[in-house]
Amino acid sequence: YFSHVWDMRGLQFGSKVDLHGIQCAIGTNIASGIYEKVLKLTPDKDKALSYAKAFNYGDWANELKAFLGESADTMIALEKKEGKYNLDDHAKRLNIIVDKWDKICQIIREEIPTQKEIESILDTIGAPKTAKEIGIDCDLRTTFKATKDIRNKYVLSRLTWDLGVIDEIF
Image (tube, rainbow, N blue to C red; front, side):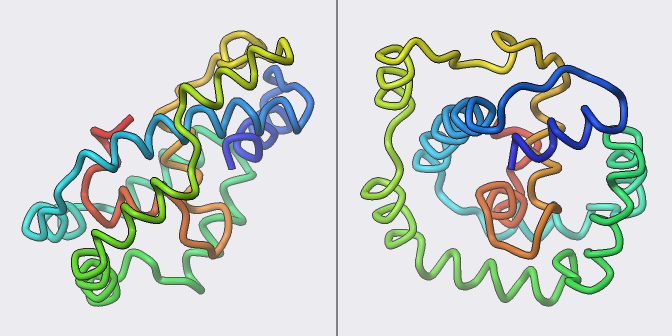
């Protein structure tokens, strides 16, 4: 989803973009590093519930609009249907996350290559590893945060939001 966000910014603001596959490889590299940080976490229910309670969707929607321009409108409309920021729904997801944390970590370890492994592959084929290398200079933290709102799928950024660590994990 990093690539989608960069493409949206490119369409709206004329900012630099590259081939979709190259952007996806870089996004995968970034995400792998974040997954490694997630594996070091111990879910803190109180922290996560407090984070969700303090979250102001109106402020976030404004930040999204500033970051993505008109592209954010679709994402904001999608949230009206999804309701992923609903506190009761968040609490239910959080309970599942906490109950299944060991299994979640096991799946991450089994399914997600390490950042070192991804960078080795990218080095082997002479591919760029960072957004900066391809001229993308927008705020990567905001890019990551925006990825949770692109589609109605449960992705890494949603997990970090549910855990209340999205602002500090990147």
